[in-house]
Image 1 (cartoon, rainbow, N blue to C red):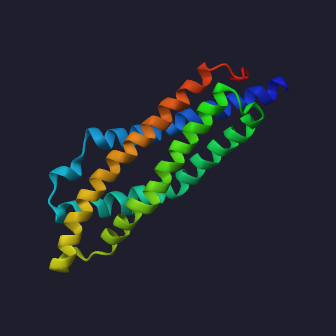
Image 2: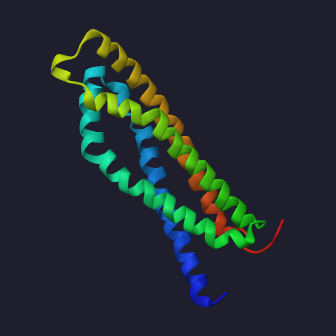
Length: 168
C-alpha cells in the first residue's frame, strides 16, 4: 500500500474519532445536564420543540449519514485485514454505533414526532398523559444512547493503538 493511501486512511480514522467523539460528547453532556428531568411535561414539550425543531433534527439529518458514511469508508478500507485487532475494534465500534442509530430511529424519533405535532395551547388530557410517558421514555432513551455512543467512541479510540496488520 502506498504512503499516500496509508496517510489518507489515517486521516479518515482520526476524522471518524473526532466526529464520533463530538457526538458522544454531546450525548454525555446531555446526561450530565439532564434539563428535561427538571421540567413539567408541558415545559419539556416546549423545550423539546425548540431543541429538536431548530437544532437536533436538522443537524442530525445531515450528521447521521456523514458519520455512518465515514464509518463505512473506514471499515471498507480496512476489510482486507478483517482478522486484525484494529479491524475487529473498528467493526465492533461500528456495530455499537449502528445500534445507537437504530435505537434512535425506532425509539426516539416517534417521540420527537409526537411532540412536534402537539398544540401546547390546546393540549387534551389524553395527550398530556402520553406526553408524561413520552418524557419519561425520552429520558431513558438518552441514557441508553449515551452509553452506546460513549462505548462506540471508546472502542474506536483503541483502534490506533492496536497493531494494524497483526492477525489474531
